Length: 127
Image (cartoon, rainbow, N blue to C red):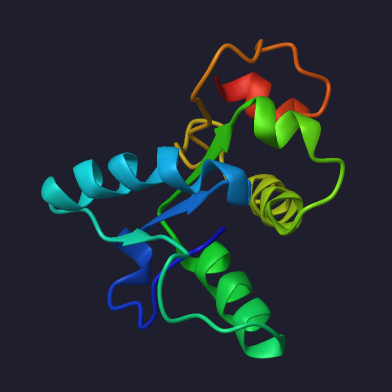
């Protein structure tokens, strides 16, 4: 689920999206990116529930440089989840971009197959 507020340089930030059950797996990815000097929006901090959170996440997806969805058995097993809305918003944004622009960077964090039918087609296209 999306990230830290306030966002300073949205156009250079990475949005890390994951099922809540994958938060522990997402933390080292976030740490490594930050250690490399990359701003990461990672929802383990100050965001509160409700409309303000939803609005902030939508703004972040609209302005981030890269969107990294974590794909796993946990995301597969969840038929519903806020991360699914994040994925949809990112896919929708990607349709406005040139095909050679890197934006979606899906990362499989376990043995979930690339052919998983619950992963958006657009993610499989860029993997």
